[in-house]
Length: 84
Image (cartoon, rainbow, N blue to C red; front, side, top):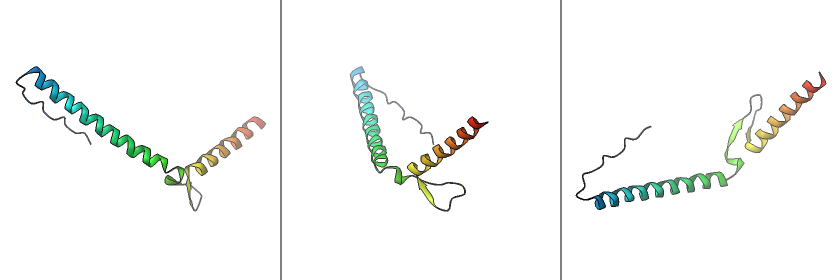
């Protein structure tokens, strides 16, 4: 979803325009900081928050289990390739 930027108003002086622009920059920085904090809070919850059902499995797995399964499968394939 793309937001259209707000129109730049007419200003009586260059200083007034700078003040408005710096205000917009400050708002943007605050918004980015808030979003960054929300993302960090989500990631601090850890690998248990992200679940995925591995095809062929009956239960959901967290990220640690998923990576363990992937590395196990990769190692099995590498071992088979090295034997041939």
